[in-house]
Length: 216
Image (cartoon, rainbow, N blue to C red; front, side):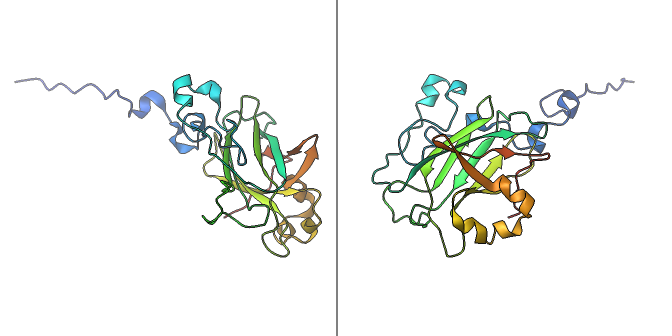
């Protein structure tokens, strides 16, 4: 009688015994290698900002080239800030997306040939900071203040977070219908303020000063 020998337990990269819960349950941290692109954070020019060059081999980093943009009109601005977690620590592997109207309050429709499409993407650095170069958007309709839609992806997040950036000096903030839905004591988390030459907008993922995020 031949003795039956049980096969050895499977030990490959699909074996949960080797790794436990894998990162597939969260969003990230994979962004620096694929989703940001060279020049993705500069919506008005040809600067390289957007992807982290320190995480790319030099020959790979040359694959992406900034778009050529001509005739972009409006007030050139810089938006920058830091992404913080619930403990107040910088998040070094977050991905920030922006979507906005142009200076005339119109979203990209394929007709404008200036190269301004209103969409940008930037990764945070080791210090948690992100930065965009863009133009200040106009009002898209009566009663709605100029704003920039922001998406946040990052380690530990199950889904994309959505919020808005408003400019502190615009009078229409007082009558904006979306801001009116936010409790008065929390509206401050959606307001960018001028600090030096840039508009500062920090994003806090959790905690006492958590940024207001919208269900969409």
